[in-house]
Image 1 (cartoon, rainbow, N blue to C red):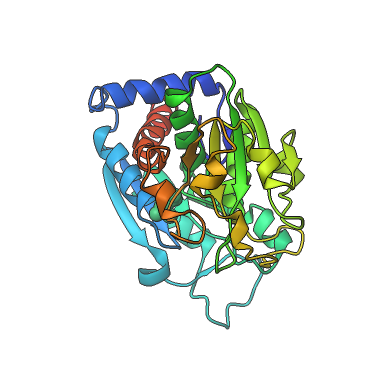
Image 2 (spheres, rainbow, N blue to C red):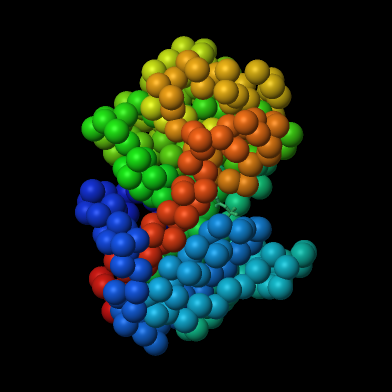
Length: 316
Ligand code: CP
């Protein structure tokens, strides 16, 4: 593995899962792997879990870590080619990424979509340019369309808690007050399609994800029908892909509650966090025995450690 931008960068998911569990069992056994190697973490948007878990994972491997909040502390980046930079952008990604590549051996980047221009957001142009101009391995800390470190941690969480070989996993849309990206549900769908589960997506009409990511998942518009017999319920809001970036519904009936949980096979409930209590998920679930949100966040460390470890082993 050189870059980690989507599930397609993983040669063998089962092997990577086992490696993550080895790191979880013995966090410091590869402490010399990252000696004298520097990880740069570049954030164009806020983060709690991704920042701390990736930093901790790198430290467990003996790496140095540099964190930069580009949105607050960096120059405004230009990404278009051939542009006359006479507006607000100060530095082109060509120079910025190339310079970061001089300081860092691996770079993690977070860049959310603007949710205005679908073609621009879904082009992957920002990450492609970071890969090209930095000339070092790139790890996605969440792109416009995908959040692979989150999805890998989600897979680890299902793998270590499942009680049957092929559980039923339901990704359900939940209400929210703001327009959110499709990155987490796209990515979760992509990883579920590459993993061995019965996978169903439920959402109001108009919230269909890109087929590129939803793939072979069953789509069920009736949430109650989708939840029937579920072993895992993954709760997440996203804005419309079709009517790009729009909030089409705020129907509070889509919030997961204990009443809805009765339809399931005593399902475990997952969410990537941060979560809006009382809007996306009821307190009774987040504070109850079926919630996996904290172990799921904890697994972010082992997902990141397995990925960084593979990149270190294969590129240096
Ligand atoms: N789930 C997740 O990526 O959390 P942060 O946005 O806090 O990093």
